[in-house]
Amino acid sequence: MNKKKNWHDSHKESLTFGNRVADAVANGMGSWTFIIIQTILVVMWMGLNIVGFIKHWDVYPFILLNLLFSTQAAYAAPIIMMSQNRQSDRDRTQALADYETNLEAKKEIEALSIKLNSIEVEKLDKIIKMLEELKKDNNAK
Image (cartoon, rainbow, N blue to C red; front, side):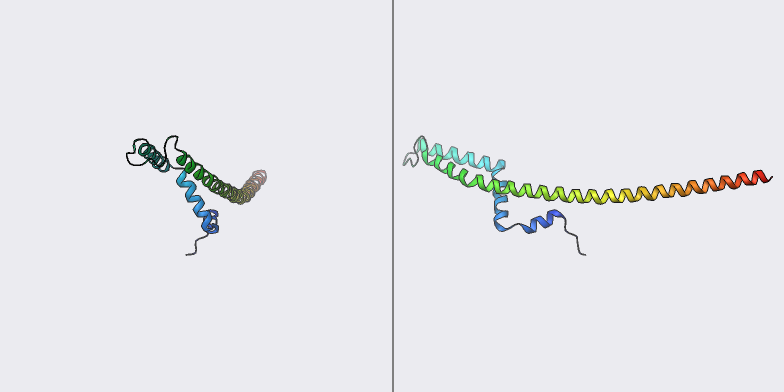
């Protein structure tokens, strides 16, 4: 069986490796899992540097941690924007596919309406013809 592709399948096939990576990163960073893991790591980082007995590699005010966050934000923002741009493209493609489907449905409904009207006219013509024949029969008697 040859299954017809919908707009979503066609769009997925057109994604490059970089597009898929950007979408995965955006999905990952926009999840509770990411927030929870990052929070745990930050608390551990701060805790180890505050009470560290051997070595404080990033003493208060945690300048290295701030640098890591800045670097993360510098890379995350454009990756998330790439994913959002692709989402906009997907939305436009879906809207166009929906519009085309609606146009086809409208044409089919109009054709059915015309057909129903012609059937009604045919029925009315037959009823009028039968009434005229009845009238002729009654006048002939």
